Image 1: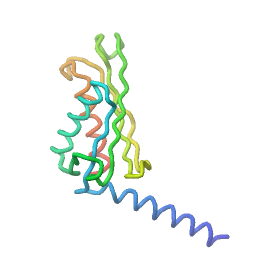
Image 2: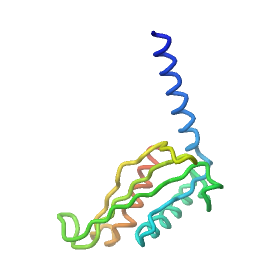
Image 3: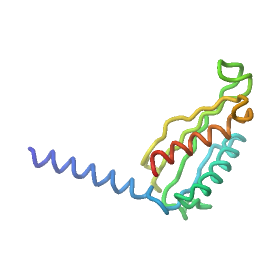
Image 4: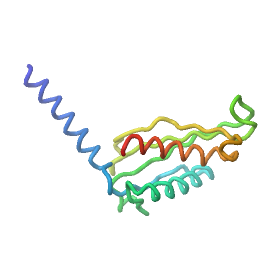
Length: 138
């Protein structure tokens, strides 16, 4: 019984390690985003930020990528405690293998428009997401 439990544990560890290996430095990532205006725009900013970071190469197609970063966006509007009536943006990244299996999922990084981010909540959310990726993978 102990051998079976040990074997299951080792197998799970090996699978997790193999999936994490596709996220290593120098591999290529394809960014997939919602077709909304904010999704497309956030994906463009994320591509530029990932190129500046230079941890992964940004691929122009899924077939050229080692893994896919699926960007999820959540938009909320109106006057809130932290914003002055603009749209708040929350972004999350799901790292997926070529078979659409999830490798890793980030938390949502939310930003509201205010004077400290130039009233650009989308750019602020992209910066927070990239900071989270750097913290996880550097």
